Length: 189
Image 1 (cartoon, rainbow, N blue to C red):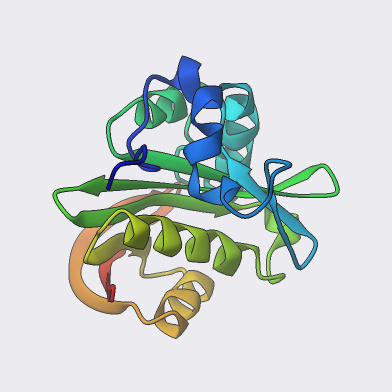
Image 2 (cartoon, rainbow, N blue to C red):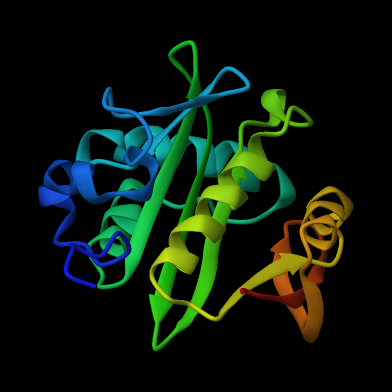
């Protein structure tokens, strides 16, 4: 494949240099992909605080620890990792981070602003992840999701994921009992 790998990036400080190679950039010269009012772009170094905020807003109300700027920067500096940021009219809507290792891809996280849910944002982000990892040659895409998250489970099942495993008491839930994680797999063509 002679071009730069979209999921194989340098350190977070060099993220802007990846812009032309990121899968979110292949369809629009202005740096974003339009559709349904959303603009999809790569997570760049200047977006780390924004993506961290989205992650905290999505996961802390469930009792999980939201990811910090440093957490996200560390992931994005790792080989095989790509991040996506979804905006609309300048507002941050959602984010996703994926990783490819040895032909297998993993959705590390996907988060949508709670106020913006049920508008197709997670579907759009997940679609971008699927497209990205397929273009990089991944044969499967894995993810983990709380068994107590019916909205996410419905989306993943509708997009063809199947449950292939379970991790007991995996996700902390604050004062409530920890939730099991379902391991799901999508076979890519």
